Amino acid sequence: MHDATHALIVIDVQNDFCPGGALAVPGGDEIVPGINALMAEFQAVILTQDWHPAGHSSFASQHDGQAPYSVVDFPYGPQVLWPDHCIQGSPGAAFHPGLHTDPAQMIIRKGFRPAIDSYSAFFENDHITPTGLDGALRSRGITHLTMVGLATDFCVNYSAQDAARLGFAVEVRADLCRAIDLDGSLGAAEDGMRAAGVTLR
Ligand code: VGL
Ligand code: ZN
Image (tube, rainbow, N blue to C red; front, side, top):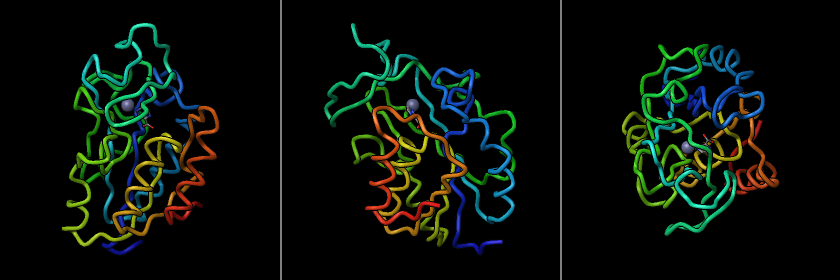
């Protein structure tokens, strides 16, 4: 059992990111039993939930002539356009039914502002708008984070790098993550996380 300074952050283990979902990550459901087991080792378990309004600006459906997985320029930089996914209150936005949610002390929802996507559990994709997680962790004296979930190369990657830059000691359990891997995004994410000081294991 870790002490009270360590938290487990479980990222976006939601139906739309699992096989059969709108933005399915290959093998996304395989990590659920291992994550459930890992929860028992932590005094603090926090879940994140991708939580978009219908018609969110990150959806390809909102951009004439753009296919899902194309990249367009947003005011804050390049943005991948996704299939419609994790719409607030929809079955796809719900946690995977096998995920143990009772141990969670906090659920951070993100991506609810129509004009900004949010991969990271700490900041939206403008890298300015905070989710509040940094303050919540700090006020509890939490300094060490273990991250698991979906997808390795997007929400886990952005969350881990932001956390490391904010001064947390961060470990990503790659065996309890699965990737989308668009055009080498997994390799780039692994390099970026290591460069930011994240421990990958
Ligand atoms: C995610 C793409 C869009 C993720 C969320 O959880 O990695 N990826 N929204
Ligand atoms: Zn999303």
